[in-house]
Length: 72
Image (tube, rainbow, N blue to C red):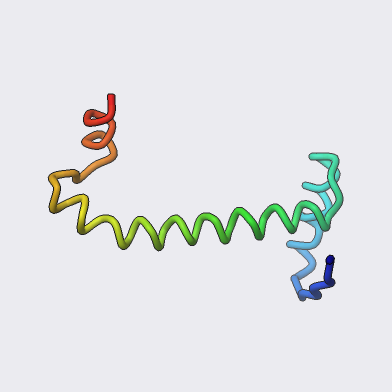
């Protein structure tokens, strides 16, 4: 079931949303929905990464390259 979410944004951001929606040939609603989904996924990933880092460091993984070397 779809629901309506009202937000307030400044004029400049509204114009940017309108321009991006036009550029990418999607509705403003779809553009904002995708932005919200991406933002939430990014924040959830950051939370998981923050919890995992101490375990990775304890196992000797300090960089992305360390992990890449292990799996390749």
